[in-house]
Image (cartoon, rainbow, N blue to C red; front, side):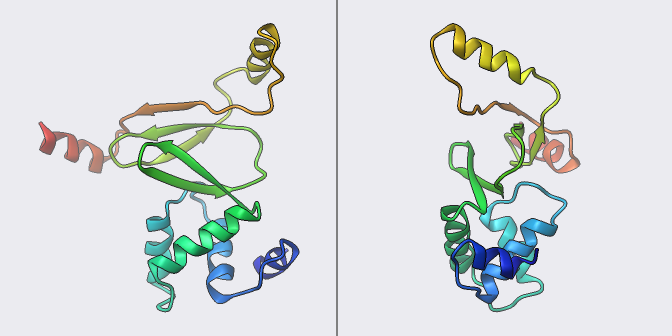
Length: 145
């Protein structure tokens, strides 16, 4: 299904910016993008899209359930396609790189813990915070020390 069709099915008017941003998330090999990431990727190819437009469109796409807004770290928001299977996140505290994983922890165990305490689990969020080993983060660590 094309981005334009998806937008119509979600009740959004097809605009150039909405189509380009939806397409970016559908086609991106990067699963988590901040508004600034989206702007940086689109600014190279699409001159008419401002950072304010990116923020508005991300809000629209989140409101209709196309994207999910993630507050993985205080003051930093990332977006991902909604509807993916349950997964957890690993976040770099320096460069804000976000990786998702789903094979390290037993999700059935989370449900058992909730039931044990009289809860019915609807979803969960596990975020591991660390420093990644990219050259940029290592360089930043040296500058801070």
